[in-house]
Image (cartoon, rainbow, N blue to C red; front, side, top):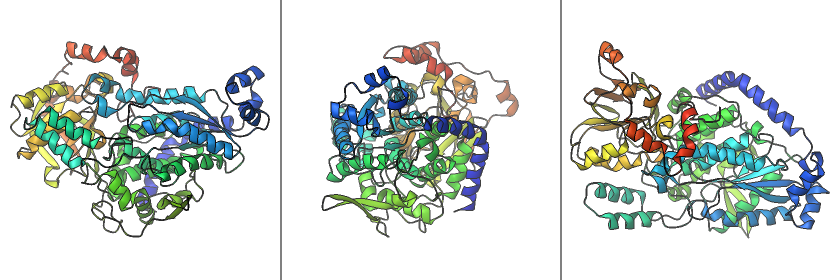
Length: 604
């Protein structure tokens, strides 16, 4: 394994030693207890299993058969989660055949950033992660389970389920994905129509037609955003049935993989190869997830989410760790928005198995980690297939099926992972440069400061931005308004860049896995509402975003800069962000949330 990756891992381990030790002590104490049906009072046991058929109740209570929890994000309005409707039936049937029982322990909320983008609901999106974690805890707190099957795919759902499960770290857990929808209108063509609409060249009818052609059936969106990055990371962490990430929801192979999740989970319960999730997810596994993210150009949202996930397991990581790993990890995949392909083309070209094999061969992954599957991390270099109706695994082909989509580590798209940490008098931020043209990695231009994304859109429509500038959109952090994603800004900024202007975005908000060709310094910390330096910035100040040297500075003389007061957000705008459409209920979370670099955590 690469020496530098070992050094970074050791640094994380040393930094986390005390908190990890305390966490594992709690995990081990809970793991040593008798099963729930033996240690609980008779009334408790009766309540827990009252709805079970009599034969299953006998099995779990008298025969002490394994009882598995299902925590599901099923709802039928969101394409990624609609396939989960049938899963409990499949999982129960498979468990029954294997002498076990299954109970749906609870559901977690699942919202879609695509539905709420640019709308008030988006201000609840980031906080939904911790709400999901708490919902997972409520589901599992009935405490009668020998393991858990976690059903979730999208942006905040997987990190939330994972944080919740790590708070029940004594339980073995397997994540059960649902797969991507079939390819529709290409992501590139969809983006073109969006840009044309931003310029007034096509109307709402044409835009709606394009969007519905892109998002058209059950399954995850096909671009490589946070949802599909989640699936790559779970493969790298060894928490899936190997190769389960990107199989279509209606494919026969998908049902076979779903059933196999029960077999896999039973294989790591007490009676077998006991592997509780709290022990499985150690600092090496966290590093493996970070490497997989960087090697595939995945979502920048995970620079927030995986900090929180690691913290739930007693492990401390920060943006320096991501940046230093990025310098050592080659970029092996180009999937939209970092390329032209979608995740179905990525899967056809070799997918997760190809990337995992290449990273292992390159010495970029810890190979000696526990996984839910027998065979360790090497199992995740193989591809699942159905042979005569039976699930089998075979080696991933040695060569890429499409070298424009995935490449071996010997000829990567880039020698680094394409993520940079930016620091300077404007704070700390991150930028994903894997989709940004090299000539745009440095932008120096006057700032145009906005306190909302609506302000920038209005200025664009009024023709006020036809020039070189750095758009600064502040008061978008967790404390201000829940840190919404700002993808409504992508089309106008892309249009201006396409006209030849040198433009960039600086914000304490998010852009996530769909950030693309416009340079964007995001997650600026500390945020403006918490006294961060973006509140000192004024329209007209010269700003330098330098992704080559890792700098983010206002080029204002130091005396003037330090003498400036912090501008406050407009009171009327702040009030709008605090009330209506459920936002009132999240006031406490906005008040208590940690910074983006600290994981935007509301529970510590």
